[in-house]
Amino acid sequence: TRIIAAPGNDTLQQVARDLAAALRRQSGLNLQVTAGKTATSNAITLRLQSDTLGDEGYRLQVQPGLAAITASKPAGAFYAVQTLLQLLPAKAHAKPVLPAVTISDSPRFGWRGLMLDVGRYYYPVSYIKQYLDYMAMHKLNTFHWHLTEDHGWRIEIKKYPRLTSVGAWRNGTQITNNRINHQPHGGFYTQEEVKEVVAYARSKFITVVPEIEMPGHSMAALAAYPELSCTGGPFEMPVNWGIRKEVFCAGNEKTFTFLEDVLSEVAELFPGQTIHIGGDECPKDRWKACARCQERIKSNKLKDEHELQSYFITRIEKFLQSKGKRIIGWDEILEGGLAPNAAVMSWRGTQGGIQAAKLLHPVVMTPNHFMHFDYYQGEHSLEPYCISGFVPLRKVYDYEPVPAELTPEESKFILGVQANIWCEYIHSPERATYMTFPRAAALAETGWSSKNRKQWDDFTRRMETQYQRYEQAGIGYATSAYNVAFSV
Image (cartoon, rainbow, N blue to C red):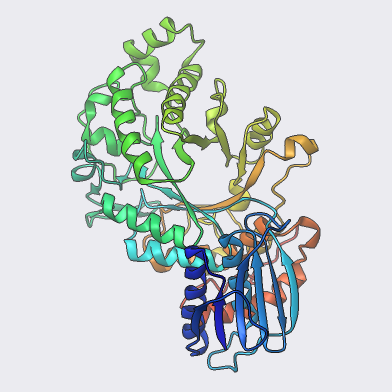
């Protein structure tokens, strides 16, 4: 058997080579990859042609001696390859035989995401790449990289070296509600490493969305540059979790100069359309007591500190638009008025997403009671220590991203769905993987399949095979998925 990719598209050729590598790992087969227009037997063929299935859709037909993949774009061919690999036996050393099938497939949503919080806990590039591999296996296409936090600044900014020399390191880590590990922790990604991750993600048809938190969750930046705060510091890098009152000073022009400089470097590193600017959990205490912030409110005829935050976000939005970027922020950016072209990530339940969609703004649904994968997934006493909450596998699977309150026209503004892995109490790659899987499989099916085609009993049947694939891939998944009683 040969793998034959139609000539004329380098990306499609790479998809074919990736298929060959995956078959070599999974089945021990060493298939030759060639360029050609077609074949009638003993081949897996990949070709592009105009289709009604969209940029990520595909057709896969398997008949005796031939498996044919067609798609409009290379992304669709890549997802067809993932399906083909799922059709092979999951057990090691099993005879690699494909069943005869005809599949026409395309995703329901264009945003199928996972967020990893590296601000609170640093993960090496090697694990980020592994995580991207796991995402690709599930046809997830958006990696939200939470790069800055109160507790760590993880991206090199050449104009402001203290962000990483100071803001990337702390003297300990809170490991439970009342325990501190006093071992120093830190790390950051150089710009070359960021480029490496972005390129690797692109090869998996995954868009990387960086998050640079503002105006709150900014203690790491303020520890490095305290003059950007309302009080002037000095500050130490925090060890305990929790929301800090120190935030970027909205009345100080140097704050905006700093953030524009930072975002200019970020925009160069990430070719995707979207940059996440945070906007969540910003206490207003310092702004209320700050003469410069109060003068900003007065001079711009703002009503209160909530409108000051809207001023802040709108100003950043205008700057990023000049760089050809769109902003997305957590649903708190609705408070005080939504920036004109902002997208909203709805995490405090669904109301923020409903409100934004009714305002005809793009929305990613990620409500914490369904999509926070740092919550418990099984019986608390048997699970690793978690921050709170309870999100078992079925709750993820049963979630419907399009709220019933929306009209058909408003529903078009739901871009998709995302799960978040916040890392206050997730302090190793092994733990991050455990908390992500198998729940990411339920997320993936929610993001891809129409709600009328989702069936829990069928999903659990198919997951038994998926667990075998996890074991073959070395994915240390949680085995607690069915150890709890849960009713919708």
